[in-house]
Length: 508
Image (cartoon, rainbow, N blue to C red; front, side):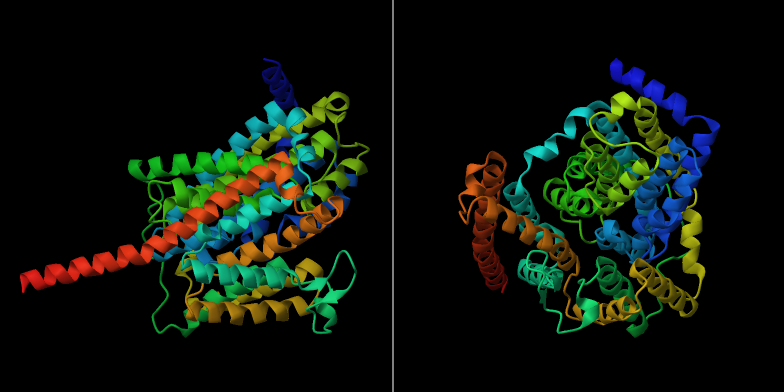
């Protein structure tokens, strides 16, 4: 009952005309930022942060939060329609773009919008009920626990890849090696930079994502002799009842996964999308279709993405620790306004805390109202001749890449990864495991080093701590299971071939 009273108090602040206006502005800007390749909430919030000096405190925080979770809505559109992802929509390229090629782009965009609404709603419930206590969960995780959590992500590579397991592991390893390029955070020594100054800070995630997915797809389309016309003029926006029933379970699973991973520092939407996709590929009734244009491949990812974006506010507002770069900027906005996020924020500023929580659900309604009816307009991009469309896409890719660091070298790096991504396509190699390795590799290395320092070089820390020990046991079970399944596969195949030959001889 107390939570309901608090939410009612929050809605009384969020539903004022002024705060509704700032919420609508934030959601609209966030959606547009998500649509543009390369641009993201981090760059946008950093540019708009000085405006918070002249905007009322509640409105400023509501607007910046709307930009962040609004971008999670918009980035799925470019990933599904043009296979140009942001960091948090990489997985959407797998099934979402395949649905576009199958003439189901409208259904894919509708699925992403509805699933994002479900994920946001579940996360807001978690945020309202458990924010004061769930923030302390992050304190339970030590370096060894985070290290094994990253390892869980690596063993899930078999669920992410659409090709063979061996190819997926190889691509994941390439991603890890790419993630090690730059300056070692511990020793300060440059590694794998080939004495090139622009590689001292490493390779940007935006450059790899736009190159391996966006530019590579453009190159593939230009190389193809067939006319690229995934949009046939018919828009099947509303799903049938059987299709809608497939959306709900996957969206709910993704919502739970995203809500949990959004709380953990280093988690967030980027990792949540991979985790939700891996779970769907294992437990869904339609697991065999995932990777070939299945609704579940879009629904789970979109829900996890949106849920993680909402619950990432829990560590910031509950214990005063930002879990990613965007939350660090949000913390700066709080401090600019003279507010210190932390355990005392709910008691000292209940109007801001509960007003921000309530505004997230208001923003959720804004976003689904803004995005789902506009699906028909997003699809109109396919009416443009590809000879005119692809230079525009390349232009926005270059602008988005350049805007991250204002560095022209990033544009050349993106072009290089575009050629590399095209080579991967020609060799039938999936780029999604590469992105997974690139994201998790540096995090795994950093936490592994911390764990070794704390344990004085003893590996026992990975089995003696309850959380890391449990995760280690799960990894061991999964690896043994995969090995047994791999060893049984050739036998089953040979038995099947033998049966076919026997049937053929009998018929002859």
